[in-house]
Length: 328
Image 1 (spheres, rainbow, N blue to C red):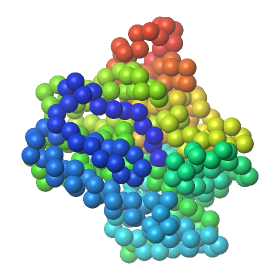
Image 2: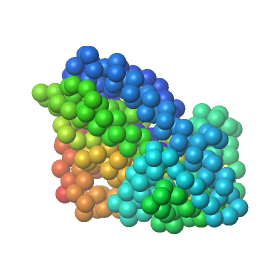
Image 3: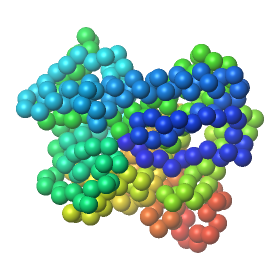
């Protein structure tokens, strides 16, 4: 569940429309006015279907039914085409991140206090962390050619690190096939683009957790996401928890970075990288640089590290020069 702070720079935005779904706000930008209404309608319909299949917080979702089956024994079920597609996206994210982004962290998130929608979790006075979360491991989830999903006992699937980003990719791709013009799909900060591009590109603002604009970057046929350890947080007896789990330990990640922004060919790949960066902590710049991923990492104190050609951060002129580091 990437909590993202990438937003649109409205000074050069084409026509846009907004809506709420799956617990957050979303925005669609189009270069041709006639495409806006059908684009918004399709995006809402697609996210409603994703919620019905993949929500960990709906007792009637496919994921929740599978979790119920796996509570006391290894289990299986046949997945809908949509669930199988989003599971394949999650498997891809796990594979390209070397398992740092693992979709079997659902039980660990529940044990850390993220057992309901965020508003409910935040409203609690505190949460008692009674155990280290179980992470069965993404490679233990298998899918047969007939669409049968097999999971080990105790598995709760969580697509929070990939589903919204994959949805942005899927919606952007579909809109470009069905409608004229260009599209920017911003699902809670997971941003994908398709179709024709504005003359100066799509201008994206990177905000700090408090909403302060930190930088504006332009993208063309790319995607950009920002993952944060500062947005989805709640209080536990062990301190402030966030929604990013290190699958190697089953624990909430240590907050080395307040947020990480990455650019990639797809929002799925960008968000996988930005989430992996938060898991890796101090090792993130080297991991990202080894993979040639352009990234901007911001510490809790606001100092910035850039990786692999991320543009100069002109919006952070107040930072001392020594607080800005680059990895190429």
